[in-house]
Image 1 (cartoon, rainbow, N blue to C red):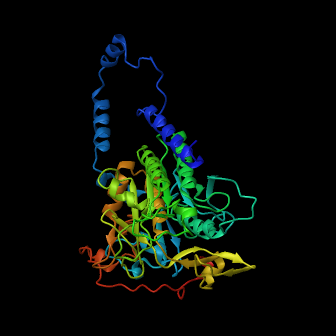
Image 2 (cartoon, rainbow, N blue to C red; image 1 turned 90 degrees about the vertical axis):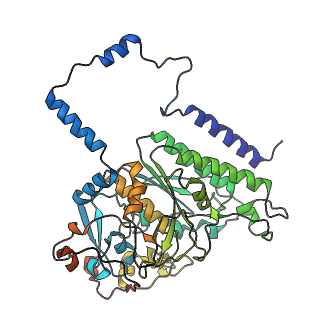
Image 3 (tube, rainbow, N blue to C red; image 1 turned 135 degrees about the vertical axis):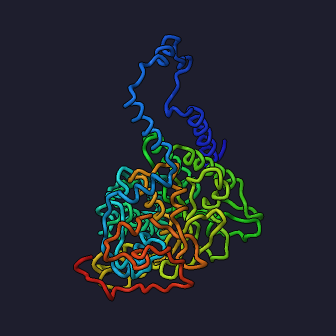
Length: 473
């Protein structure tokens, strides 16, 4: 008899192939033996339609022209006309302000503001996959949470819990970055929260595999017309032959290792997870957004599933690996790779703080600065590409909600992204143009119709609350 986990692995892959084989583009089951060909009379009736009047012809030709319009043209028109909302922000929220900062403008130009699309994210489903979530925090109470997905076993009764792996602070920050009341981007999106740990707080490959399967089933059940965006900031290390055997890690993350650093369980589990991710990303209208990792900026991406970016580069652009940069200086902070085409803020990130012993306290996940704005909204500061990934996922939801087509999302994102300093990485920008700003806020070069200034050689935006009017925030 096969071990339980191997049996589960093989059954899961077999079931998936059955599901995939039944998916022929119709998003449903085709009855065996049933003919879907038109009869001769039906085909004849189809081609013998009455002629359209010239007015109708003109209308349909115009409509056809709009449908064939290049994405840059129709997307620019949407960005120039879609209803907007302006959110007043704290001087501590540079991580949010820079997302709507057009090329050629400065932090002083945009001020303590965040320009966003009205009802950003409405009608879009975002799956936030992480260690756990505080859904009663000030930032998350207003989020439209449809449900939670729990993989793995129920809480064990042996008293063992891997509390450090549950990391509810981290997951709460991910959800809030997507749709939180004060720090969120797609505040009208619908969230589905998925835990990467089982009931005891353990994260292993079997648990992750079950989570991905449940997400796949959930997307499949919604049909091809529902846009779905997955945000994942929880990466797993890939053991190398030269790595020493780590007995503290293999139970939860890697499986049983041999002297080479690998195990048959590790290989099977990773292959199965790769298969499920492939099934997910090949569904229409689905995006998979993953953080690049928090290694040094000279280290290439080396954690799963971010490494799959090399597989999908040039093949499926809807698998997106996001790097992280410092929004106040415009430079890359963490590891990257050639397939990382956009970066989002990953330093001085406002995140939900936690009450400990009836007080807001620092934790491993954030630092509470005790600023008045943070005190009012129960926020703190954190850093990492973990927060860059949900920012991109939320921006995708926002663009989809204003009518940008699925096939044009990534080209638009890459076209809009631009470096904030001369040698900086291409940074995320939502595309709200200067022409939408009040005339009193428009910079002088734009009023004079001069060309867009080049990025500065260096940048040092002050992150402080000195100009805050707390009553407005």
